[in-house]
Image (tube, rainbow, N blue to C red; front, side, top):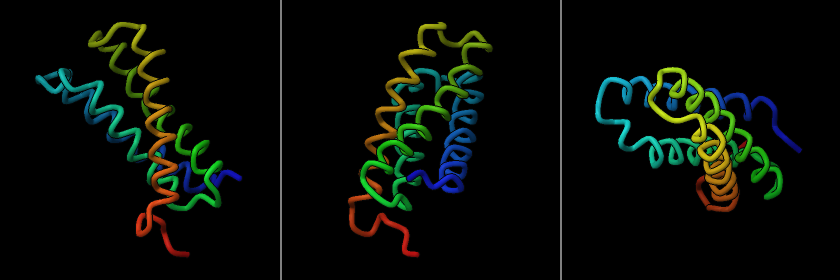
Length: 117
């Protein structure tokens, strides 16, 4: 089962971080690290979601959604600014969804990473 509130929080935080990276990359050499930085941000968004997920499957699905959505928004803005090619929208979003999935699973299974309720 997807924890909707936590999914919104993780996705919103990931989106803010993605947009900050995109804006910084538009004006500085940060754009050299868009791929690694974007996937790392998506992994963090997934991890944040996974901390409150009820099970591994939910953590994986929610983490993939949070990581993919925040990357999709960030990459779309980057495309609109002319900083990346349109194909990055597809491949970057898919790669970020996978890293979000991994982050969600890690957030669920690593002791101490889980939120206590």
